[in-house]
Length: 413
Image (cartoon, rainbow, N blue to C red; front, side):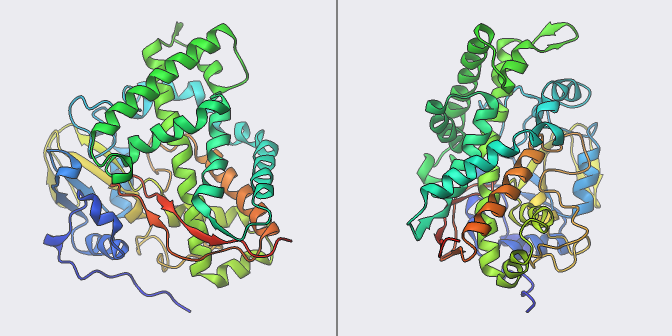
């Protein structure tokens, strides 16, 4: 059965991607589709996006072209549309706010740990953690999938990789949530939380770096404190920024993908039935479709370094430009029936981790490995698992994240 084409009753003048409430609307997919077709590069102004407005780029090919042109579209002034001036944030001063060639030099320091080969070494650890989580759910039927499954897995895996002690991991997740979701009433409802949480995350990173100088371990922070660039060790400020970036991003986006995957499998039961015919064999392709469908990072912002033009729209030097991956991943010109969830979609060159430029997500391989293992183990043990209601989403114009997702496990196998 085909899925209906997403639509919206809003006119172009009524659509505002700066307003965080827009992202809670049930017709969000229709809003993006309308913009792709009628206004692929459009201006949005709202207090939720700071004092200055921004250009929203919503078509796949335009997003790729903008990502590649780092000379014209820079990361240096922030990657969230809300950032302006000196608002402190977790990734401030990190490699995500650098352009080539500085970005490449910094990225090489941690690249090996997050490479496909590097994360494969964590397969057994991830599998053990998934099985432990599932063991802990034994005897339960109704659960909150976000809280009970989608959160503890990436939280534990990522912070173990970074070297964060178990006792501190929950606090780090709380701070990461505040950096992304301070616009949600559950996390303060204003931008003050971004600054406070960002400062605390970076301060913790500097503290952790000092611990690893005294006693190195086999984790990423130990690698960073021993690394040099052109013969120079990283400063405390750089180490704090590195940890701020990785510590804030590591758990939240994978949690979103794991959660929205269950919603999709419940909404498209024929796709779940197909996956169950060959759980291991279909896992890799299904994982790619999961991250396309979830598009956990909805956008990444750039700043124009010169007057330019994109898709016929003039953009002034200094303007903020947001690349909406959550729209590009559903572009009809690139994906057949993109509003349908298909675990065997081929090809599937999605942009959930960025695409076309140097800022491709550092944690992409780790995230995909976690999702693949998580759903392989989950479907083998609980093949009847399903969402029993819609996900309650967090209020954000940056990260597409659920707060809760009611689910039923069904009979264990």
